[in-house]
Image (cartoon, rainbow, N blue to C red; front, side):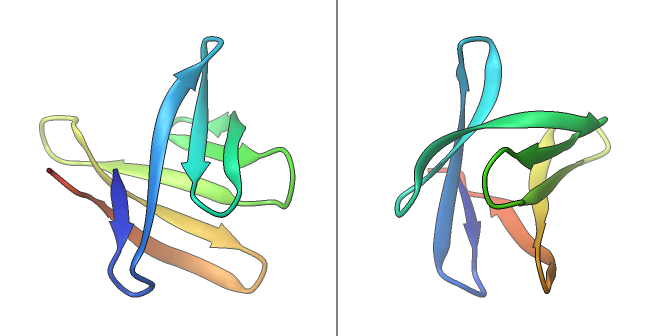
Length: 79
């Protein structure tokens, strides 16, 4: 799970039929399309997601951009 402290919103990711998908409470699941390394976009309302990693290569979080929203930060929640 990834949380955006600014919005108190949580997103999670899963692999569905061999493809990365995002799960959002209000919108359900949606398959993502790869755009660049660690970068993805949704099929519906355009949401751009770019994962960032620590020095060991582990995903720490991602930046979300959509419309006028640019670089909204989500961090990995370890529960």
